[in-house]
Image 1 (cartoon, rainbow, N blue to C red):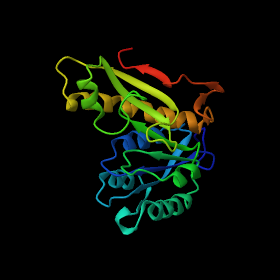
Image 2: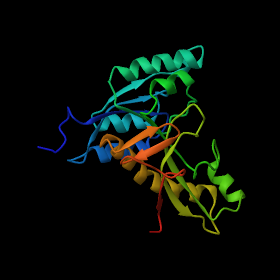
Image 3: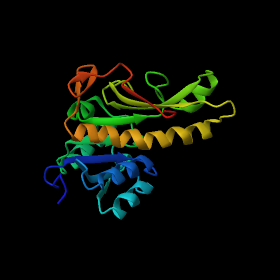
Image 4: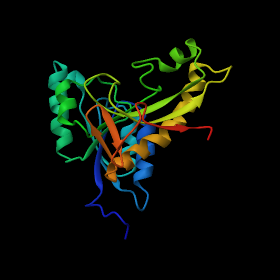
Length: 223
């Protein structure tokens, strides 16, 4: 018998739009015998998203809600909330979900909504982060797991992983190395939340009752 029974595990719903590599890392971590969380559903706004196949292979319920079926963001987000809440999640995880969420959606899941962004926030909010880091001449780059607030990519950071930028890096090679780190830190943040160690308190994230630094906990991939 595992330490965490299915009934006591933190219930996680994951939202995706694409291939679901971060989703896979979360599924793999949840499969551990003593994992404190279980992925109870994966929801996508795109029926062709390969992440849905990953979830089905793992025996996880899947749903598709096509944003094109709704006249506006509010209508789509309302339908999304209704579907998510059927699974009674303790935590909602954005894993490559390529939609800008409405303030009402974010408020509904305030303090229990996580995202991962491919930069060392607050640097490079938005898109094309790897190319922007290269063009700026940065010496390091990375990824950040953060709580989601109404500010795009602006919620309290939880954990960051850094990678050195090499002289011959392209946006593609840099992205590949950053993604390796994403697959380590995202399940870690989900685990912290599931264990009751992580919470959002105002504009800061707290771990074990202590405020995290403004950039979150740093993990250096060279360590």
